[in-house]
Image 1: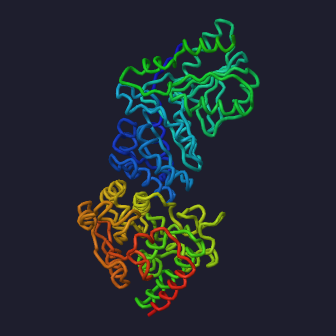
Image 2: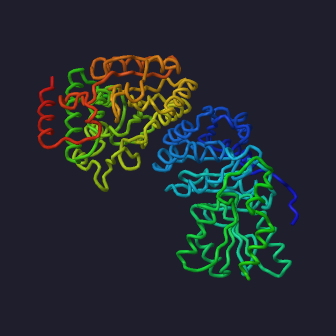
Image 3: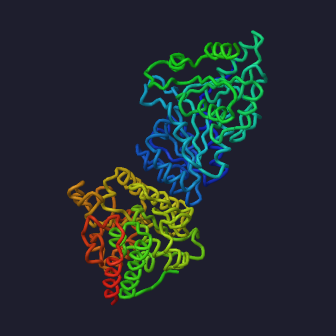
Length: 312
Length: 278
């Protein structure tokens, strides 16, 4: 499979937030001194009156955003996924999720994409953490186009949203006119032999795996679960009913992310086999991004192998 | 419209407020009387002197905001809100009961007049800072009042928020530290010495006022000065207070942090407070 363009999804965010800010003066960016890495540079330059930087103080950052949201602002809290989900977790729970305020977390460096930085900066727990907090919406776009569209959807959504982006470049898989709806999975490949449910930077792996499986006459359904909460239960159920064999793929701990969410649906239905591919509940290390995925079996080859094993 | 009460009238309002605090915690048999009483003078002075709020329109955009960062003393704020007419007085009897708007710690989605949900200590000041920044951005004249506990300043987030308040020149932010010198496990000196709180806030760029936080005239004077001082600095009123203020057997007793009075204690507290009208 050939992908022509490679763009990090954090760049999609950085582009769209400027457009949103120009359209609506209530859209703010609240940085915590890693704005440059999270791509808020253009916003800071072009919309200085809508830009705040509270320093290396994530807990305060979350609270300030909540206070702003009570006054009708739509603050985008910008940091790395590890800090946005863990350093500020309780502040977001108490001051944004509990009162259901319009605070958006826009977090770069999701999953193992902060590869060389090592385990301290890799976020493999974040989506699971926010999945368990009421009122939260949890999103990871697959490419820069999806990032732009879902950032806009998050801004329009009433309530707190966690958005997770990649540091690394990922292939652009969507056309510019593609539409996205929060909580609605995207069908990227038809097939009833097996279903591959992926999100974020692993959607490209699912697409490549499906292509290889097709060469062997196996028709794989490919779904992009950009939103893991609310989960598109209808799409999971259809995949279980129509294929019976599911593989989940994510750049996240296999505990409590997309794989877990899908397993919950399957268990309650009492149907379907699910194989989870993701980070194997272990901390990472400084290494190339693709290596870190490979160490955990998050590869095209493993998806193909697991699909064949499921089909039997 | 702000109320324009004399100091004597404010003192009497404060007694009313304290009686409502004792009464609701007694009926609930649950809640935090000690800190609710030590912050009562500040609460009264805010709602009946300093703040412009509209009980008929609790989310009025131009209102002054109140952030009770020490959320566990919400009986004091609930009493003020009911007495101001944000909701009927009878609602006070539902404190901490299932389905009540008066949660054990304040919820902005459940209770009219609560500007932000609090309860987890150390978080309210950052929210107050956000509100004050929004006020500056929107060129509004409202002030944001924020009540902190003394023990709560153990939390690092408080000092993070102070830095932000200074950076953004929030002279529309007025913090009150209810320094009753008792926290849950013991005295502040035993648990975590606060050192010179005024100097600490000054070092973070605040203009500070040190007062007896249970002297209504001093509280009102400090609020007036803080509100009048438009010099780009956030304000902090350090109020030396007495935990359990006004109820003899609760005063300065660490045990009265989160305990409800029994029948006899309730009667005694109400008798004592009744004698405090001026």
